Each structure stands twice: as structure tokens, then as C-alpha cells.
Length: 284
Image (cartoon, rainbow, N blue to C red):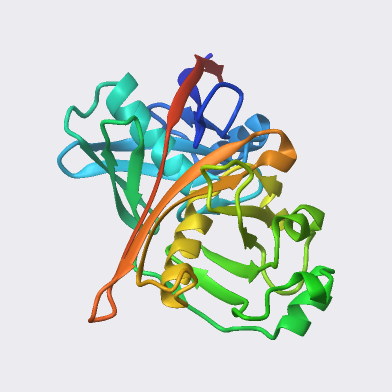
């Protein structure tokens, strides 16, 4: 019987039993895509990562699976896997670890305050569906949508529909299922779940097998770019903390830094803390 070493981490976690859970299979180069998908479904976390090779100079080859499908990029799998490669497995000793994902090479840096930072790809801003259409399709009260800002599709490697809401009370009321607008929807409002947070978000991706995600680094990268693009805080750069996952009893905190220069180039970074939870042997 073949065995594969695995680790469990909590990402974007400020303490125990918080953040988004991640399973990571070590030395997965000999596993087929079908086997990876079955393992991801068996763990049934939002995402499972598989380290398939690479090194500290060229970057580490990593694949990401939800319980339902492989995806090109996701935030908490990127940070959690980079944490394991450097802090636990000792495959890298520098303050920079690069992951080779389907969406491209993503660098992760390690701060002195235990916050890991990933620099995301340049954002792609898509269509802006009408507020009325979004309200109807997602079964949201029209009065709960902040019509001062657009609903918009944004991607830094994985596309999300971003929907601005008027308050955290409105945010707590929503529940998004499979819909005709987008497989992944991020709703956000100003004001945090805790005093240190400036914003609150919730992310639903039923088509990916994720009813509600506790913490979504990829979507928050899209949000960071959106906030700068539309000058949500009346500035061309942001440095904020965001709360997510409180409705599913997995409180998470994400750190967002983003800016846009005079040439229109974005610098989008999402950070968070990672905690090692468990390790074991997966018997194939």
C-alpha cells in the first residue's frame, strides 16, 4: 500500500480553530489528476494542494483542487503551501518562496510579524452587470446593494463577481447558491467584524463545491484591486484588514495592500498568518 505524507494548516488564522483549512499532499508527482480530485473530495476542504516537484530556484510546482474541480489559482492554498515548504519542510530558506501554479508564478514573502504575503497577478476588470440584475439573480434585496459602486467581474487568476453592499447587517443576511451570473461571488461592505478590521466579506462558490468559504485570498486580491480602481477609500492605494468566515464559525483576517501607479499598473498583495494543525500519512 502506497503512502503519502500530508499536512493540515489553518490559513488567515489569528488563533486556533480559525481561518481556512488546507490539506497538502507532499511529493504528489506520481498521482494522476483523477486521484488528486478524489483525495480533495475526501478531505472536503475548500481546497487541497499537491506539491508535484520544483525547487527553491525555479519555483515549486503546485496544483490546487476544490472538492469539485481543479482551479488555476487560490489564495489560502498559496500561502499555506508556501508556509509548509519553508517553515516545516525546509525546502527553502530564503524569505521568498515562489509557487508555479496554473495561473503563473506567484511569489510569497515572509514578514517578521508572521504574516505571509503573496503578490497577485495584474487584475483584469470585466463587465459590470446592472445592480437590478444582480439583485434578482442572487436573491438580494435591492436596498442592500450599494449602488454608488459597480458590481463587477474581476480576476487576478480566478474570476469573481464582486458585489458591494450597504452594511455588515446586509452582508450577514445574504446566502448565494448556484446562479446564472457567476460560479464564485464575493460580497463586501465597509466595517469589520472586529474593531481592527476595515471591511467584511463573504464568498460563495457552490459550483466549485464550496457553499461558503471561510477565507478567500484570491477573491480578496480582486477586491483590493477593485477598491483602488474605484477609489473606494478615495485613494489610489490601500492598506487594510478584512474579516471573513465568521458566519461559518471560522473567523479569518486578511491583510490587503494595493496601489495603482500613473501608468495604470497595479501592485496587489494579500497577507495572512498560517498555523500548522496536523500531519499524517495518506494511505492510497
